[in-house]
Amino acid sequence: MNTNVKNLERTVICKKDEMQPGDRKVIQVRRLSILVVRKEDEFYAVRNACPHQGAEFEKGVLRGAARPTTEFKEIFYEKPGGFIYCPWHHWSFDVETGCSMHDPENTKIKTFDVKIEDGEVVVYA
Image 1 (cartoon, rainbow, N blue to C red):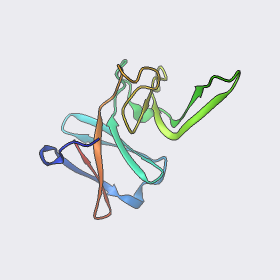
Image 2: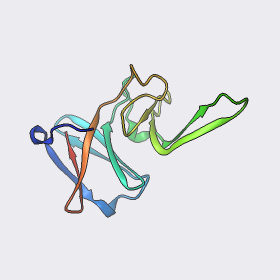
Image 3: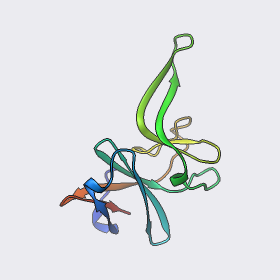
Image 4: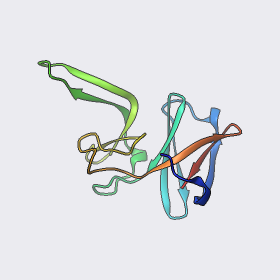
C-alpha cells in the first residue's frame, strides 16, 4: 500500500527480528484492531476482522492458496503464507493486497503500510 504516511498514526510493533516468518501480532490503534504478519522477509498489516461476519483473523490460519488450473485434476499452490483465512467460514484474503481470493474486485479487507525503520517494524494507520 502506498499511502502518504505523514497524516497517519505511527505505531512501533517490535524489533524486526522478534517476528519470524509466519508469526503474527495484533495491535490496537485507537479503536481499530490490526493484524501484522510476517511472510518471509516482508511484513503486512490488515484489519483484524473478516468483512463477512467480523471474525478475528488472528484466530484464523495463515497459509497459501490452492487454485484449479485448466488441466484435469491439477491444482496450483500459490503464495505460501500469503493468505489469511477467516476462522468461522474460511473466507480468504491476500495479506499483501487485502483482496479476497474468490472475489478480488468486490471483496477486500483494509491494509495498512508497514515499514522497517531503524530495525523496528512500524505500522501506519
